[in-house]
Image (cartoon, rainbow, N blue to C red; front, top):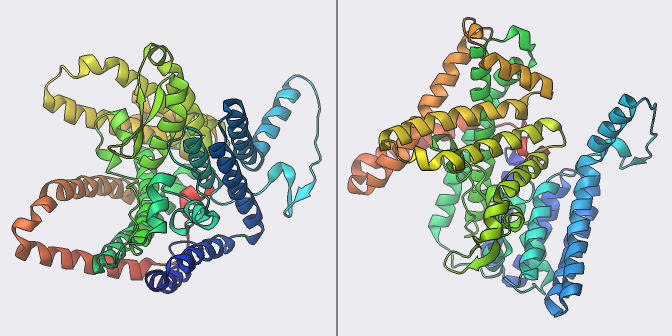
Amino acid sequence: MIFNSVTYFLLLAIVVPLWWVLPRRPRLWLVFATSLTFYGFWRWEFLALLMANTGLDYVLALLIHNSDDQRRRKLLLCISLTSNFGALMFFKYLSFLNSNALSLLQLMGFDVRIEWPTIFGASLGDIILPLGISFYVFHTLSYVIDVYRRFIPAQRDFILYTDYVLFFPQLVAGPILRAAEVMPKISQRKPFRLDYISDGVQRILFGLFLKVCLADQIAPLVDSGFDQSVAALSALDVWTLAFLFGFQIYFDFAGYSHIAIGSAKLMGIQFPENFNYPYMATSPRDFWRRWHISLSSWIRDYLYLPLSGAKVMMDHSTGGLAGAAGAEHTERRDFALFASWAIMGLWHGAAWRFLVWGLWHAAFVFLYRTTKPTFTKLPAGVQSIGGWMLTLAIAMLGWIPFRASTLSIAFGMWVKVIDPRQYFAMGLFENTYLITALLMALMVAAYFVETRLAPRSSERPILWLPVQSVAYAFLIAAVFVYLQPIRQFIYFQF
C-alpha cells in the first residue's frame, strides 16, 4: 500500500475515527493491526521477518534493562547489532558482495560460479529487498542502544513497543523516530482538537502535490536524460540533469514525509520535521541539518559520536542526544566523519556509486570544517549568497552518482562539468532547461514566502486568507488531476 493511492486514504478514513473513539488498549491493537495490514499489502511473506526482528529486540532490551552485569549487557547489545546488521547484510548486500567477490576472483584468474538456492521465489544471490528494512532496523537499534545507555527504560508492553516500531505512517520510509519521543504519544492520546484534522489534511495535501504533481511529472525528463550516453551530453546538460533529479528526489521524499507527518497529525501525534528547505542551505553542514533530518541526526547520535570518541549524553532540555568533545574526540573526528558518511552512502544502496556519493559529502563537510575560520571573516552578504551558491552546486552535483546507473557514467558526467569546451551545446528537450530554471525560481520564492511573508500573515489576516484559499483550491485541483499510483516513492527501495 502506498500513500499516493485511494486505498491508503480509505484506510485513514477508517482508522482515524476509531483512534479517537476507542479506549487505550483497543487503540493500541488498532495501530498494530493497521500497521501489519499496511505492510502486508506489499508482500505478506515478509511480515514474519518484520515481527521476528521486532520481537528479538524487545526481548534483548528487557534483558539489558534488567541486568547489572556490564559484560552481559554488552553481549546482549552485540547480539542485537549482529542480528539487525546481519539481516541488512543478507537481504540488502549479499548480491552486491557476491558479485564483487566473483569479479575479484576472476581478475585473479579463477573461474568461480555459484549456484544459489531459492528462497521466497527468488535466487538467494538476488533476494528481494524487504520493504522499509533500512528504516525499521534503525528504529529497533536506536531503542536497544538507548536502553543499553540507560537513557530510557525498556518497554514491557509488547504491543506499545511494536506500535512504535511499526507505526504505519513512517514504517517504510521514515521519518526515523526515537522511542522516547513517540512511544508516549502513542500510549497517551491527546484530547481531540479540530486543528489536528485540518493541519493533518493540509500536510497530506501538500505532500501529495509534491509527489504526484511535481516529482512524478519531472521523472520522465530525468529518466530520458540519464538514459542518453555521456558522449551525447554537454556540460550544460549535466548541470540540468543534476538539478532536475535533485528536485525530483526532494519533491518525492519531502512529499512522503509531509504525508507521513500529516497522517500522524490526524491522530494528534507530532512527528519531527524531516526537511527544511535543504536547497537554501549556506554550507554543506547546514544542508545536512535540513535534508533528511531524522537520518542525519540518527547517524550523528548512534554512529558519528561513538566513532569520534565523544561521550554521548541525554540532553534533557531537548529530549535528544548530545556529545561532549574531549581530546580523543578531536583526534578521531575526521576518521569518524568519513567512516560515518561511507556507511551512510552504502545504507542508501548496495553499489559503489552510493559509497562515492557519501564520500563526496564527507569531503565537502571536511573542507567546510577546515576553511570555516577563514570563511567566517568574509562579509555577511558574501557568506550567505556565496555559501548558498556553492552549497547548491555541491549538493546537486552530488546527486549524479546517486542517480547514474553506473559509477563510470557518473565520473564521465563529472568530467563534462570541468571541461570548458563542453558548455556550448544542448542535447536535452528544449523545455527541460526552462522547467529546471522555473523550479529553482519557485523554490526560492516559496522559501521567501514561508520565511518572510507567512510570519506576518497574522498582521493582515483579511489579505492573507484569500491567498491561502486560492492556493489550497489550486492544490486540490492539481492533486485530483494527477493522483494515481504510477510511481513508487524513491526511498522505498532503500
